[in-house]
Length: 309
Ligand SMILES: Nc1ncnc2c1ncn2[C@@H]1O[C@H](COP(=O)(O)OP(=O)(O)OP(=O)(O)O)[C@@H](O)[C@H]1O
Ligand SMILES: [Mg+2]
Image 1 (tube, rainbow, N blue to C red):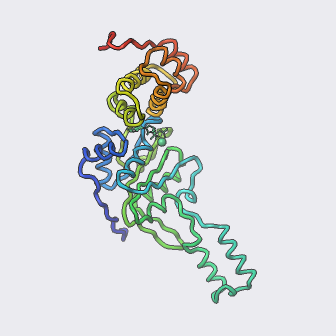
Image 2 (cartoon, rainbow, N blue to C red):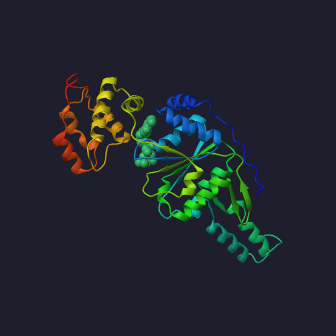
C-alpha cells in the first residue's frame, strides 16, 4: 500500500446551480449539465475530460473555473512529441555544466570542501531544476487549476505519465525524492477527439461532452461577449449559424465564429441580418471555399415573421 495520504480537498462549490451562476458571473455561459460535472469534479476531486468540436468553449471552461475560484491557471499545452522534460521537469543542463566548469577551473574542492560529491549534490538540487506545468501544479501552495489542453495530441507514453500524475498526485524525482501534492488541483483535460484516449485515463476522469450550444445559450454567449449588440441581432445571428450547422459542410461554424461574425456585424453598423448581409460576410463563419460557395447558393433568410414555426 502506498503511504501517501490523499491530499485534502476543499469543496468549493455549494451546488451545480451555484457553479452555473458563478461561471455566468465570470462570463462563461454554462448549462445545468456543465454545472453538474464541474460541481462533481470538485466534490470528488476528479479531473474533467472535456471533449467536443473546435471552438465550443473547452479551453474557456478551464480558464473560467480558474477565474471563478480565484485560482492560478497552470496550462500544459499538448503537442505531438511532448515528453516528460517539457511536461514534468528537466535539469538545467547549461547551468549544471557551468557549475562543473567553475569547479574544474578553480580546482577540485575550490568552491567548497567536498569535491565532486558536493558538486554532484549541488547540480541536482532545487536551484538547477526546471519546473514544467505538471510539477508546478503538484507543488503549488496557492490554489491552481491545471489545464491539460488538447491531450489527444500526445503519444501514449506521455498519456501514461499524465495518468500516473493524475492518479497519485505525486512525482518522484530520483535525485530529490518524492514530491507530494499539498492539495488536489482542479484539473481540466481537453480533447478534440483526434484519437481515442486510453481507457485508464478516461476511467480516471469525469466526462463532459461540449457540443454546440442551444440557440438560447448561444444567444446568451453572444450577448455576454459582444459589447453593444442588440438582442434582436444576436437572435438572428445564432439562428443563421444554427441553420448552417444543419447543412452538410466540411466544417460547421463554432461558437468562436459566431462571435467573430456578431462582432463584425456590430462594427459594420448592421442591425438586421438578411440573405445579402449573410452571404457577403460568410468568410467569417466558414473556412472552406466549397462551404462558402455551397451556402452562398443555398441560403435564404426569410424576413422576420415569415414562415417560421
Ligand atoms: N459557454 C461559453 N460562454 C462564454 N464564451 C464561450 C462559451 N463557449 C465558447 N465561448 C467562446 O468561444 C471561443 C472559443 O472557445 P474555446 O477557445 O474555449 O474553444 P475550444 O473548445 O477550446 O476550441 P479548440 O478545440 O479549437 O481549442 C472563446 O472566445 C470563448 O470565449
Ligand atoms: Mg481549446
